[in-house]
Structures are given as C-alpha cells and as structure tokens.
Length: 234
Ligand SMILES: [Zn+2]
Image 1 (tube, rainbow, N blue to C red):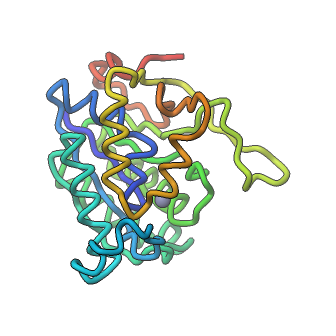
Image 2 (cartoon, rainbow, N blue to C red; image 1 turned 90 degrees about the vertical axis):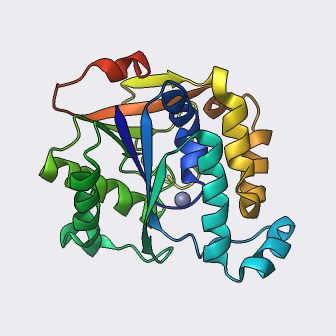
C-alpha cells in the first residue's frame, strides 16, 4: 500500500503523525511526504545556529532536518512544493493554486491513502488550514486515493487560539503508537532548530500525543480495508 502524507512545514510530520508513519513503514508500506511550504519563517534555536551558518539559510537547514526525520521514520520520498512559509492564502484553495499542485502529485503517485491535518490545522495556522483544505479538495477532484484521513487533536488537548467556540473534528479512528514512540522522539529531535517546541511537547505531563494519534476518516471510496489494521475505529 502507498500512503501520501501532506504537511505544511518541516516538523509537522513529526508532531502529528510520525508514530503512524513509522508503524506503516515498519509493516512494509510506502510513505511519500508532500511538503507544501519551505519552513523558512521558523525561529532557529541557538543549538542549531552553527548548522544554520554551514547551510546558509533557514530553508536549507529545515530541509536538512526534515530529511533526517524522514530517515528515522522510513519515509521513501519527499516532494517539495516549496511555497514560502506563511504565504498560503484563501486563493490557494478557492482558485486551486495549491489544489492543482497537490492533485498533480496525486495523479503521479496514485496513493491508496492520504493523510493531512483536519481543517482547523490543529493550530489554526493559515498554512495548516490552507494545506488541509487544498488536500481535501484535490482528493475529492481526483478520487485517486481510496481513503483520506485527517489528523485531529487528542480529546484532552485544548487550544489557546480558540477564544469563543471550540471546533473539533469527530475522531473516527486512532493509532496506538506506544511501540514506536522512541522513533517519534527521534523524529522530533531531528528538527533541532525547533527545540523550544519539542521540549515543551515532551514536558507536557502525560502527553496523549506520545501514546495515540487520532484521525477523522474524511473520504472513503470503499475499495480497501487493509488500512484498518492500523487505524482502529473508536
Ligand atoms: Zn506547521
């Protein structure tokens, strides 16, 4: 089986879905990662400053870190859409700018399953939301993938960005990642420039994201059931 994971920034794959990716690749499935932006707006932790000097740009540094994370997770290939970090807009969805780019990769890669963030982007970051919506639209238009799973946040995780209404996608499936949690840690630590973020992530008491990854089955064309050995219904 081939799984295509579409993520907005280098490190999103590690935070959100690395346990699931590792379980899939361990079982012999192929995973291709599509990266919509270049991560160039990311802050760089002082521990990564020497590497930044060597590589010459934040974009190059984050790409290098992403490659390391992909190696830890057994990801077969990465496709870079190379949009500038923070530059995705409504037009990428409405006018199909990003939708067409993703659809093009879908028709070339012909994955059985696609994984992206749910439409809140988990954090409401505009790149996350636009990548999620564009991926869903591209999947609907191409109908290449049999199933589309959207990464949702754990039931106990609240967001500081939701000031009035809490928006949650229903959790339909989850993946137990306890057997591969060390790989999730390594994938996160590969993103040395983002050390502040993953230190906070590790310090969170009983962090549910180090035990289980949660999904919403968003599109189901009903052809393959093999995937459900990993994605257990809740
Ligand atoms: Zn991100």
